[in-house]
Length: 169
Image 1 (cartoon, helix red, strand yellow):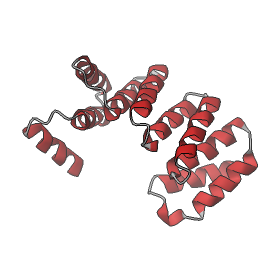
Image 2 (cartoon, one colour):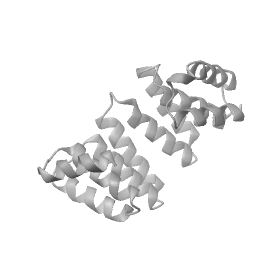
Image 3 (tube, helix red, strand yellow):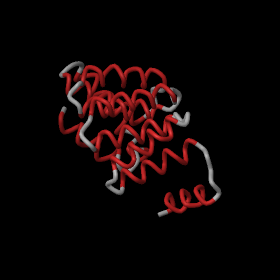
């Protein structure tokens, strides 16, 4: 509700920031209007918009329409644009896992944890990629143990995800 309130306020003052457009597109995706979101993003991109949030919104829109390959391209563009924010790299890695390319996901998560070894989402993704690749399960188990030892710091979505990964080990 607050996000919608802030988006409406940004629209009321005719904010032209890329974050505003990215959030607007994400709201369209959340409302089940993935095609409209993708069209909206394409229009923004034609006008020169291209921040990480815009590419991420397009990735989620494409993913919702079943186009995982193009979604990965948009997640990659978001990650490249916002290379300091490991959430974008994690979104790419998660999409790669969902798309059945755990090797690519492993590379993505290794790069993300190399940049920020304490980023929980990247560490969880790395553990899951290792499990899916059936490679370094001992390392995956240790990584997951390290994350779970700080369970209080995990967000609401991260905690069950970590538990599900632990069940796979």
